[in-house]
Length: 202
Figure 1 (cartoon, rainbow, N blue to C red):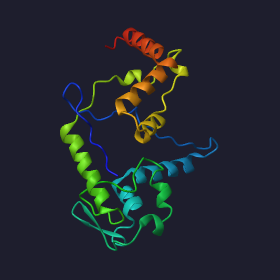
Figure 2 (cartoon, one colour; figure 1 turned 90 degrees about the horizontal axis):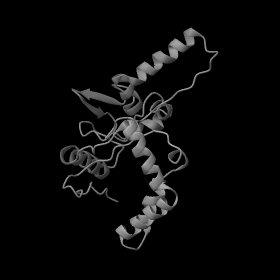
Figure 3 (cartoon, rainbow, N blue to C red; figure 1 turned 135 degrees about the horizontal axis):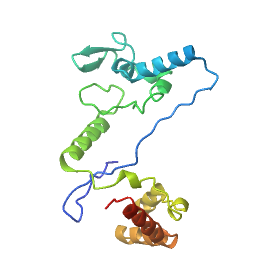
Figure 4 (spheres, rainbow, N blue to C red; figure 1 turned 30 degrees about the horizontal axis):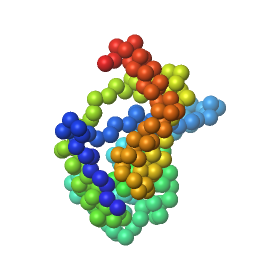
């Protein structure tokens, strides 16, 4: 399976998608004493450090990998860090949305399929060189209006329907848009536009 690169828009440009702000959250018992809380936060700081990130992704320095300048070189390419140190599968995403398979061509991702890694790296390079962020207003992402609060678009369902469908793609997409209009999409757009004007956003 390949990833389709962003197509040329009607205005002649290529755009890459922009999603709402990412988030992360942790919950702590209100009864935790200050000393324990301080140790927890120290641990979070470590996981966010370069050393901590290398630990959860590559294991222990000079045991599982060596540093060659900025390049990380696994000592035993057959070692799967998540299997050798199961806790890294938890710590990997505890303090940040770190990834098990970074698409960084500066390092040897020994456990990753080389073809997939190359495709991912080439895709990101294409995105950075050939596309731009469309004009949008983050302030409107979570704006509340009566119709919008009751409305939702299930992107995954829409995508799957079109991918497995047999009709003309534009015809299928138009049909789905009309279905959402029947559920109140036009009212949502109207309310958000009105809210936008009230906020001074054009």
